[in-house]
Length: 93
Image (tube, rainbow, N blue to C red; front, top):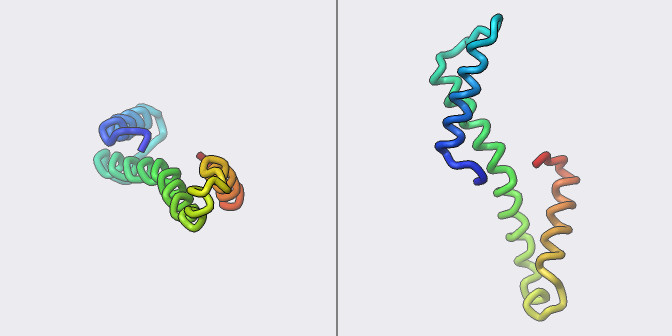
């Protein structure tokens, strides 16, 4: 993950604090519940890329023999597969 759990916690706390300072913003949950929800959402979004990479590595295992024999380039296959999956799934990274 690109951000540590501590950094995510700090971002969630800062976001709740900033929203609390805006006139007209009323929370329907406690600050701690909001921070927890924000942490879960941010963590899940950051994990999208990691799950995608793991899926691509698993998919490319089918070409292991061709890659080790030098018939296919792993890096090229990885980039092409990643770009295709991102486009097909409309993933925003």
